[in-house]
Length: 198
Image 1 (tube, one colour):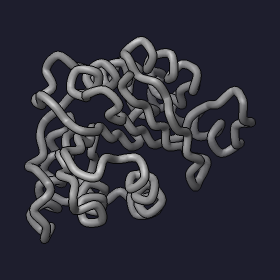
Image 2: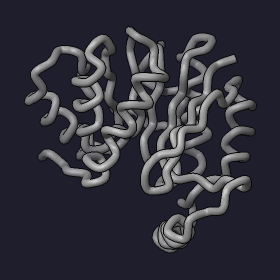
Image 3: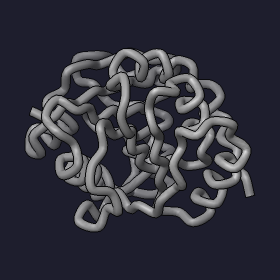
């Protein structure tokens, strides 16, 4: 029942450092597309003053999250909820103090990212962060060959997938009332982007 995502073990420490800097000191963090659930448990353990609300659109992922949660010793992880990022009008959460989304944007149709920003705009107050992690294309920085190959491979698997342009992300953010306040360079040519409600 439990899923294992090797990338989660590789990137969780680096992500956790940025989260400690960018997240509020207390409150609820909605994690969209939580996947296996390994990240949620790790971040909840290392940032115990925050309550983590994992979510996913996949039933198998939700079962995996629940299995990890059953083993988790803390009390700051809520029961996982079914949430489809592409359907912002039906998100089962009324408010949050932050939204986190790791490695979804490039392996989902663009509609999911549109919905992510639209949904976050409905539940976040002014200055609250929407934090994204993953690989992006930045016209100001030469794209690593590994990311170009990754992008090509994703598009072969599904033409609706692929690395997104940073400028396109920023425009979508602005259209939904967000401004990018930080760009953190991460290991393996990934980025953490922090957008805040304006």
